[in-house]
Amino acid sequence: MTDLPWAGDACSLVAALRAKELSPTEALDGSLAAIRASSLNAVSFVDEKAAYRTAAASDVTLPFGGVPMGIKELVSVLGWPATEASLVLADQVSPVDSTMVRRLRAAGAVLCAQTTSSEFGGINCTSTRLHGTTTNPWDQTRTPGGSSGGSAAAVAGGLLPIASGSDGGGSIRIPAGFSGLLGLKATFGRIPKGPHTEIEPLTAVLGCVARSVADTARWFDACNGNDEYDPFSLPGVGGWEAGLGSFDLSGLRAVIVPDLGSAIVAGPVAALVEEAGTALLAACGGRRIDVAVSVPQGGREWMMAGTASLLAGLGDRYPDCVPDLTPEIVLGANITTRHFDAKAAINIELYRRKAIVAMAELFERVDVIICASNPDVAFAAAGPMSTTVGGVDLMAEYGFDRAISNNGALTIPANTTGNPAISIPVGCVDGLPVGMQVIGRHHAEPLLLDLALAVEHERPWPLVAPGAPL
Image (cartoon, rainbow, N blue to C red):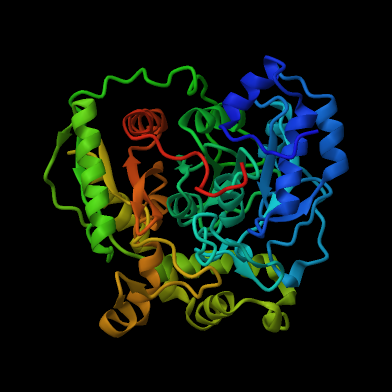
């Protein structure tokens, strides 16, 4: 038995298992010991007996054969809690594996831990009435982000080599950026959401938070492809991991705009993204294109559309359940129930149309858009959502709507339009990680992975946070 979790990425763990440098059971020992000893509060449930049965029977020739893995608590796993991180659903248990989970099992994964999320995935920090506060391994006074905050904390904190995430407004890229990890939000429909598919608001995708580009590519190779339970799922593609490094990036046209045209971004964060984006283009022989970027901001529209879907899930529990909900979810529910009418529905539709046209027009002139993943470094672990950037009080300067929506102003646009976008670690400001986001055309994930690979080679990032128990 070992009491140390694997310090490398998932792909290197599979290689070590195949070389018999350790066994799947020993790899699981290390992760479970680290979870038990951790103060990050990144894990809300451990399925120890089932995980050891799976580890003992692991086929290490499979893509993730023998890899201990975390699954975000918004993703269904048979027999695991199905709480949506909410006290309201605290007694719920999942009757099924999600399609992605079934595919991970087929790829050999050892599913051992459920990672924490913000309630219903609604905000960009991970602190709930049900589980308490999840902290960032780079600085435990700060948030790892949300809603895939537990996954990010577990992977960056050295507890697990890889974990699942989902992203409806930045919930993979925001925590990846705050926690020094790689986070790919794929083209809408890349990984199916069955067997119980939530349709509206047509923004959420599935994926992972990872330590390396290869891990991310392998995840999507294992999990993507059409499923009849998800009418928006895309046909299967393959070879993303095998094809890494195959793009000729010379001549790539990029616009570098840290604020994506309208977000309010802290000066040091913007400067680091500017520097990293310029260095990336120099390394790959790309060209910087100066083009005005103006992507419509629709934080209020995004919030109301998402909350309508949330309320559909609560059913007749709402509004009696309000005392058990976190303040941000109550606020969103109040706004939606009072203001979601025909006019609001029209505004949501107009916002989506304008965003799609604006993004498509940009991609007539450039191949990728480079901006920040987050407006600033990670804020206080327990929240509330930050309304300051670089010490500026956005509420006082710009008002409530602008201050709140700025948290997702860099990430929501790609969810609205369905474009793929990736958060790549590029360094630190005040000792806290900064992510550079690269947005691409629909179905251009392999190009984004190759750009991330170029960054990984030129300025490699720490696989785990400094001071993690490794």
